[in-house]
Image 1 (cartoon, rainbow, N blue to C red):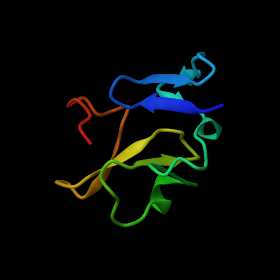
Image 2 (cartoon, rainbow, N blue to C red):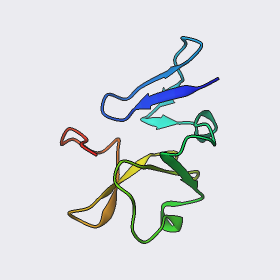
Image 3 (cartoon, rainbow, N blue to C red):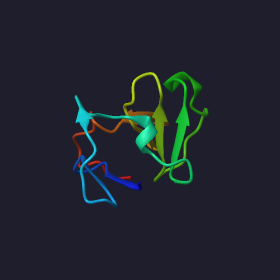
Image 4 (cartoon, one colour):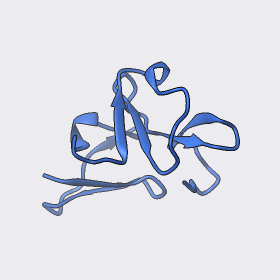
Length: 88
């Protein structure tokens, strides 16, 4: 099953036409395929690389809250807490 997640809308779909469960803004990490190049999984946010890549999603296993790299602030921003339109 292939899962597609739009971090701007929070919409998650699968190729089977069903929706993945999102609980409190969290998507289970096992729903993200390993072959998906734009997502990198880590044990914790602290394990993220010192500098991220724009347009890549960083996924910590301990919280299941996806993050994006924010170049202006040189920090990781939780996508679920991003209220500025979520531009990558």
